[in-house]
Length: 456
Image (cartoon, rainbow, N blue to C red; front, side, top):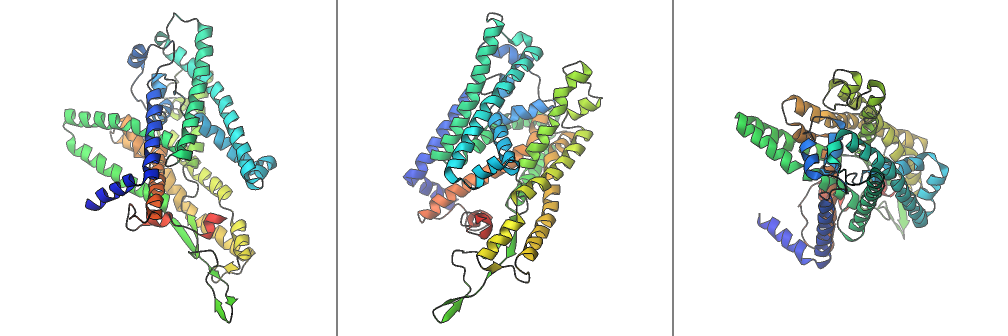
């Protein structure tokens, strides 16, 4: 405990780090404040009374990512998600379209600036479309929550502009946090939105346990959540180290095999190289059934017993089987896009390095490809299981709002963002010769990695 207090004092004593943390907290506070500012023409009290509790639908997941702003019809109702969608599209175009490949790989800083501009304009276009869809959802599902004093054309036009401006402002907040704060700004905004709904969900679950006399069940739920978080940390931090050696080079009359630039002689291959992207892609596909359901059923909400109804409920068995399969497939696809064994083999050859027992060139490429394929299998299965854990939690009687934190994108984002932020604070402390946040472990190692895998 004394070491923890000393570490906090060290953090506060570093002026630059203290300013970055306060700046980050200030912008996050602004973001949360905007989540409670209702759109003009919306009656917040009526909307709150008409909004149902979490029922397991896809829209509940969107509401979690926006910190409840979606159900509150606030100016940040769409949150930062349109920017995430635009970023994913641009990233995928970088794998398939030569023009975007050239911007990513060959044009350096100017290319990245162009890609950022394209992403921003794409965010505007996506937000305009989603804003219209969101207002349609509000007007059809909660017509009494819309004030009749404002003409409909004015209501629609003004709120489309406000929702778009809210997303662009959120994007600006994220970029400012990244530049002048601590951590990745966009990821922090998403994490804050997710965590914002956790206290209320936890409190409701506790109250239910008190009312029904199921305190032991609540204790088991908390223990299970902690265990799941620990497993998720292992999945995020898990690395397969491929050992490498550098050919001896002559220095005067002596020879040495110490690499000229490396401190570590291995290639780190992450067990979950794809991160949270497979779950995001799988969820994007699973969002399609609720959208097309009205076209086939004629109702805004399909029957729970129909296929469209089951595919619109993330707690149903068909939904989770398809979801698990999509996560596994997308994990392999995205890992293949990110990890290029040929580039690793070529880089080793240029650095006069080799994998012990493996011939340079094609043999090294095949070996790395085999290792990546083998470790991706358990990684994809674990990622698929984590993605469907909320359904299992709901099946065991956990409240839907609380069950969402037992896995899926919410848990992975929270764990990943917290680890990344802690890593950046750790690097600030170490650079100024203070003790880090941890004495040992992967977090401390991660801050000092200077490996070949990171430079390919």
